[in-house]
Length: 314
Image 1 (cartoon, rainbow, N blue to C red):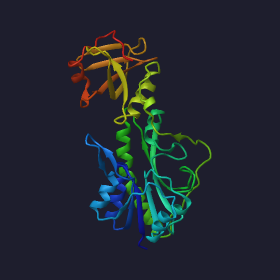
Image 2 (cartoon, rainbow, N blue to C red):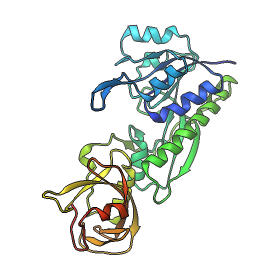
Image 3 (cartoon, rainbow, N blue to C red):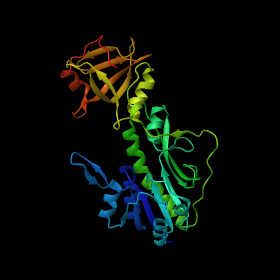
Image 4 (cartoon, rainbow, N blue to C red):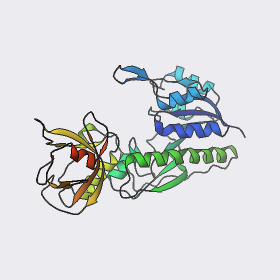
């Protein structure tokens, strides 16, 4: 059976799934994405990655600010779609939308539910030190990521993996997994399993207030914090680099290191090695970014700074 599909998504993460669905010949009759927003120095309106991808594929795009009105819900139903595919859309789907297609809404979610329901599952998994994450297809309900799971793929989180790397891995897997789900649905063989009521955690949106590094934490906690926020929004600290004021520096990559000292103390700052003490243990900075500059290796950073062993960062 051929399926008529409505696709709903917004960021880069969603694009591979849209491309895979179209590439396999499914009939995507409409695409929904967040409205264009002002961005860049000129503050010009910028379309979302999904919006741009859909237009390039010749798919009509709709960008309502809400789906609560009867007018929007009637338009959604008018496409007479068999199923909606939702990947990081970012708008609440009311009951009328969830029930606006024959088979409801299938959601591609980047965690191993019920762990990390919500907005930032990739970041939160790494920040918490999880050893595994995954991508799942679930049947959407009115609750926040509470629906039964149809398909799942697990990905190991290695010691130095960043949120950006896990994002890209899960994004690619998500397209393949959704294709398998649609294929099973078209054959009448897509089954689902209710989520466990145990182990529920919520991945709240990352706030600016939590991006500053707390050097009093253990080295493992600091390392997880750094890689969980890399490359965006980026964990940061302040360093005295020879100027009049302390400078904010983002830490994009780190690794666990030998050494101990007062929290925030520079233990080694020579050649390509910059090691900083934490509340317990130490980390080595691998890639950093000074304000207004591109990301750089520690070696390049040290050539342009005046950090020395015994200095403090905060």
